[in-house]
Length: 73
Image (tube, rainbow, N blue to C red; front, top):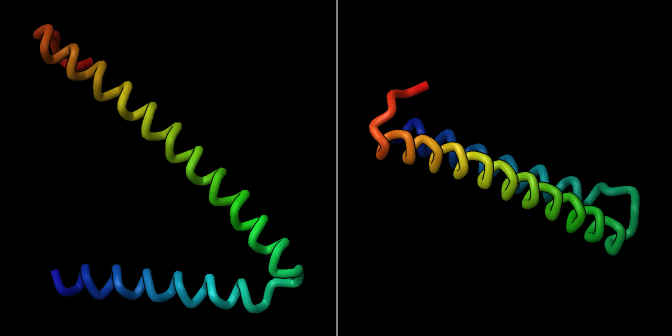
């Protein structure tokens, strides 16, 4: 468990440091950087929503099969 915690902490810390460096060394203005960040963040959220909806539909179909007593496909 400690190794997992250390790994996750390292990933989080690396992400924070990386994001900070990107913001400091970006070639465009702060407003452009924020707009680009917002745009990418919205894309990521939308991708996550689509993946969640697809997985949810898949699991609901499996649950319906299980409740109907049908074997796994």
